[in-house]
Image 1 (cartoon, rainbow, N blue to C red):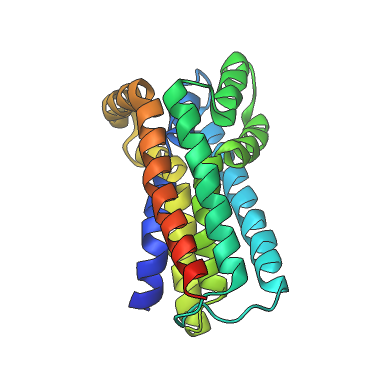
Image 2: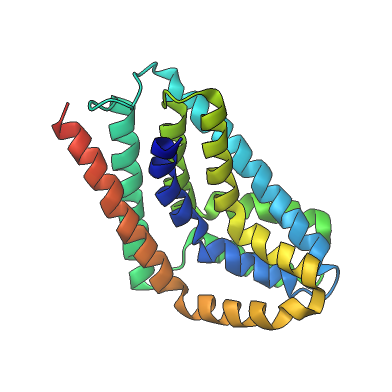
Length: 228
């Protein structure tokens, strides 16, 4: 259990630190009508999308029949996933440093235009778009998912590791709406402060996450390639 969690947890924590999803959720919670219902609809849409992504990803990753990653020699799929996701994170980090708007920020801008008039069901679709455009989180989720699918640990351990990965990836959406649901207006002040900080530093946060984990994925992928 510790071995698999040690592989999955860093990537899951990286996926959790997502200013894209957090700012989208805080934006929805600031809407004038039924903010909690909209925020839960947003979370549900993202959760369904991530679950579908996990099923499709696990199916594709196991289709090649590669051997377990538990030994010294890693599979070809392991190497490809890490090199591709690492390169994607490197690209996303460079874009964030240049100040280019990410797909997630463009999605957020479209939501902001309709936030006053749109009803709760619309936010299911917003959640789908929010998760699909959070490319940095998906680029961290996929290699962690591959570690789980190719692990030789018992199914119960793999399921527990997946639950940790899934919930931490959704945490930027889950934690704010849980806070508002449990505390009501008492949560307004901390959410405003958090949103102000994240909005002001979103580019640097995104770039930092992308570069750190790009280095990690590229290093592990290249090391595995050299050791084959």
